[in-house]
Image: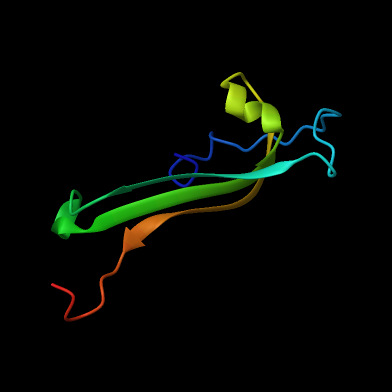
Length: 79
């Protein structure tokens, strides 16, 4: 959505809840196999820093470090 619309924006807000000495690294990832035009496979991920409270399943602020969304290329001979 962020790539396809100028209306979609990231919002970075300072929060005292995230202290460098306490943060943990979290990764959210997803993929699909051959489900787009031309049977391309897709993948995406977000790498972030967050509070250990994320394990409790409650809303938790995150600091996004890296993102990726795109097609996956397979090396010749794997299939």
